[in-house]
Amino acid sequence: MEGFERKRTVVIVGGGIAGAQLANSIEQIADVILIDPKEYFEIPWANLRSRVEPAFAERSVINHKEYFKYGKVIVSNAVDVTEQAVVTAEGRRVPYDYLVIATGHPYSTIRRRRDRLEKFQEDNQKIICSSSIMIVGGGKTGVELAGEIAVDFPDKKLTLVHRGPRLLPFIGHKASAKALEWLKSKNVKVLLEQSIDVESISESDREFQTSAGEIVRADSYFLCVGKPIGSAWLRDSILKEYLDRNGRLMVDENFRVGGLSNIFAIGDITDIPELKQGLTAQRHAMILAKNLKMLVKGVIGCKLVRYKPSQPQAWISLGRRDAVVQFSFLTVSGFVPGMFRSRDLFIGKMRRSLGLE
Ligand SMILES: Cc1cc2nc3c(=O)[nH]c(=O)nc-3n(C[C@H](O)[C@H](O)[C@H](O)COP(=O)(O)OP(=O)(O)OC[C@H]3O[C@@H](n4cnc5c(N)ncnc54)[C@H](O)[C@@H]3O)c2cc1C
Image (cartoon, rainbow, N blue to C red; front, top):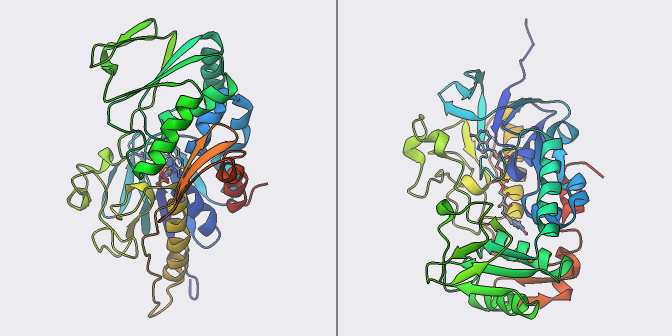
């Protein structure tokens, strides 16, 4: 039909921070399809609070359809990509004009929102029923979970086992020392340079031997070890040559993968040299949204917005009141950063950015 122009199809793989933000921003200007193995979006850092206060998850676990009303959601894992289409685990081919890969990390594999909420209830019961708890892993997840339990359940005997010589290895020494000091002040026993063979332990165990031979007695444990990058599905695809040795996709300043004109990647999966953060993933999404708006409208000679890596800024919550924040040249800890971060964990801000109350 003359004068009729079909809307371009944008397929977004991964409905985490970056994918959800992008889907919400462009849903009215293109036919947008979001592929994610979960029917909901969740804010990863709220999960730890949700274990001590399950009702918290009501606001941080959000059905995709709540913020993404006009587009289409396919609840499935993507398993391959060709020049024309994404292939899902069920063998479905989903054609695209533009493809955006945002499969940062597989934080949760639970498909339904209500089952996810139930899992938080279960974790909460596990905490309530244990007098001693072991946390394995002293990265952000382990430290923040220890902080949440130590503050909400001060009578629990907590042991945090961490393989490295210091907690939170991705931030500066000063910030990591402050977190350690805070945990100790809450009677958390921190074992550094020791590890637990997680393959050999089970939920029924009550004694755990560390690599240094120390015995940790605990009624239950939580594994807070790093999740792999969500790029295994690309290893045999047309994009395999653009994966770096850490499994991240190599992108240019316009988020284009390997310079391809219609395939982009944003969020934690990219090889951009910066701290991997939700706030950064959101910025990627906002910039790519601007560029896609021009591209799908076919603006001739359009100049795409370039992304510049952001200055590192890391927030670590320590329970409900305190936090450590590391800016480029300054580390601040205590209740002042806690006022900004730890009360609602930026959930309100994140919801507003998706057009939700
Ligand atoms: C405990 C913790 C605390 C954190 N605290 C902060 C903080 O305070 N501030 C901050 O800014 N950042 C924080 N972060 C980091 C932040 O959560 C990540 O940087 C952010 O989630 C990255 O967003 P993303 O969209 O790239 O990936 P993710 O949010 O990891 O989303 C990836 C999505 O892709 C989906 N996916 C994976 N594989 C496939 C596949 N094959 N097919 C389809 N879908 C797939 C997943 O299901 C998921 O929905 C924290 C992270 C953790 C774990």
